[in-house]
Image (cartoon, rainbow, N blue to C red):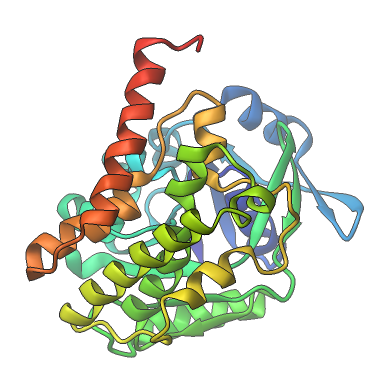
Amino acid sequence: MKIGILGAGALGCALGGVLTQAGHEVWLVNRNVNHVNAMRTRGLVMRVAGVDHTVPVRASTNCGEIAAASGTMDLIIVLVKSFHTREIMLSALSIVGEHTVVMSLQNGLGHEDVLAEVVGRARVLAGKTYTGGVLLAPGHVISGTAGKETLIGELDGSLSERVQRICAVFNAAGLATTASQNIMGVMWDKLLVNVATGALSAITRLPYGELYQVPEVAACAIAAVAEAMAVAQASGIVLTTTDPRAPWEKAAAGLPLEFKASMLQSLEKGSVTEIDFVNGAVVRQGLQCGVPTPVNLALVACVKGIERGLISNPQA
C-alpha cells in the first residue's frame, strides 16, 4: 500500500517506520527541513524497548515532490496539529487520486469536517490511536506502538471493505487495529478525557500531580465532562460511560505526577493550543443540538485569552 503521513513528527514517524518495515511504500511529510534531511541522510532512527535501530524511509517537506516521484497515495494519514489541518490537506491534493482514502488520527473533534470540505466526505475515515512517540532529535524517535490500540471506522458506522483492508495492513505490520462501527462514539470517549484536563491544566499551568489536588478543579472538570456527555447524548452518540467522573479519573491513570497536558505543553512553547477541537468542539456541537455548555465556553474563553497574551507579549 502507498501511504502518505502528513505531519510526521514523533507519532507519525513511529507509525510510518513500522509500516515501512512491513514493506509498504510510506512517505513521511514534515515541514521541518532538519528532521526530513536527517531521515533522508541516515534513515529514521527508532528506539524500541531502549534499543535504537535505523529504518530507511522516504521523507519530504512537500507533497509536490512526492507526486512527481510516486504519484498518488492509496491512504493519507493526517497527524498535524488541529489548526494546520486545512492547510496541510490543501497542500497534499497532488497526491490525492481517484481512490485515495484520507484518515485523521488527530486528537479532538472536527477534523473530519475540515478534511471533507477539502477532499469530499466520501473519502474521509476517522480514527483514534493510543500509540505514541517521542521526538528525541531530528530523525530520531522513541516508538510506542507495541500493544497500543488503534481504532478506525467509517463516519456513518458502516463496516466497509476499505476499513477492513486498512485494518489488515496495520495488523500485519504489528499495529493492533480494530474496525469500529461506532467510531464517533470512540472519538467522543477520547474527547471526554481531553475535555476533563486539557484546558484546566493549560489555564492553571499545573502538572497532573498538583492539578488533581485542587477540589475546585475536579468539580470544574467533572462539570465540563457532564456538559460534553449531554451534548453527545443529544447528538445520538453512543458513549461507553455514564459517569462524568470516569473520564477525569481516567485522564491521569498510569501517568507520572509531573505529566503535563498537551495544551499546557503548547503554551509553554509559546504556541496556540488545540482548544477549538476539544472544549471548542463541545461548544459548537452544543449550539447545533441546543444543549447549553457554559463551563466549556468559559474554559475556551480563558485559553483563548492566554493565547492572545502570548501573541501580544511573546516574551512573557
